[in-house]
Image (cartoon, rainbow, N blue to C red):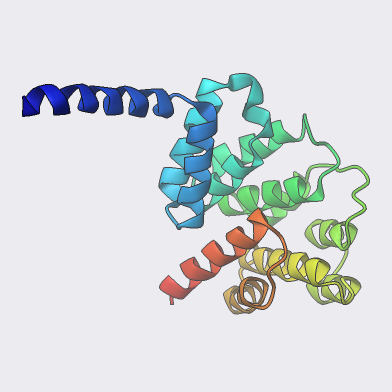
Length: 205
């Protein structure tokens, strides 16, 4: 009797798990949760699965590009952001992450030479962030342009930290990333990125 009661239940649970494993939304949500928990390799694998399940949606997966960066898969990261540009050509953040992937895979000079073009991005200080990655503005100037708005300040510190790390200044990177993670609550998913990066830097001391 016990087996007859439990076994069908186990079958249903297994069937539900299988269905869930092939549901793109469920896989996406788990990949996001894995990233927030610092499980970057698992997160990247989850986003890979979403791209396989729904290949037409794959260019939209900028979150995948970020997970690939932290998983150390820099060539795949580069390809994801090049793909994302086809659906979001104006976004400065896409160009910034592409720079970061190329800088880690090759060099900052090659990343600057390969910097993706962008369109008008009205968010402050996105224009200045782009100029920083392009080599036309110092990080300190970019940060000053962010003004007093907390969200603008958050993005300024986050991308200054990422830029410093890509160009070899680990101490400044640690300072700016920690500031972005600890001082601000703005940024949504990008704040999760700052927290994950801060935690990685703490472990690498």
